[in-house]
Length: 189
Image (cartoon, rainbow, N blue to C red; front, top):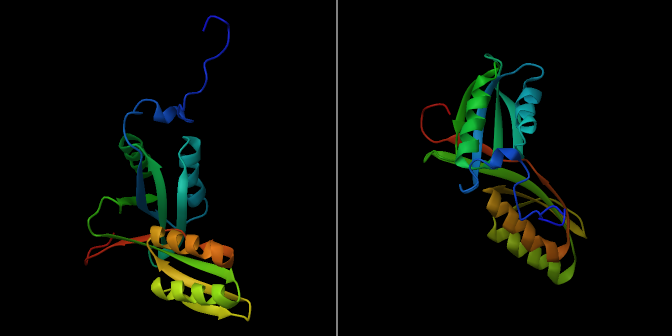
């Protein structure tokens, strides 16, 4: 521009990592990362993401094999296919990482999440909340005269739909575990 002004930001990406392959569509991936269960491993894995400008949408971690001191970190992230390939390759370079499994691209992958949903209401709103909970197969795990706490499991989209339906009925609070994943069949993964 000749007047010395900078051009407006026309929706350009926030991270330089998205510039090289900006024509590629953004995908969501669930990665299962098997790691040695030792201090600092989670910080190294999450540091890899933050240091490169990648975002983590969901993160769960727990020890899965005490005899081998192995933990499983399940990470849900988004990016172009190129960026996601980079993430997998960089994770594999970390010393405590034993294996990275892309659950999303596996036909045998299963993903589930758990949510606790507190809803306050009386009268018709209370009846409607119970009706919707039955449709979603949510379980009442606590109740008072003015509120319920529902436990609901399933795909993330299902949980989001349930929560959205509870908003007008008196949604008070939500606690979600994050995505857990595993592959069908007899093999590990």
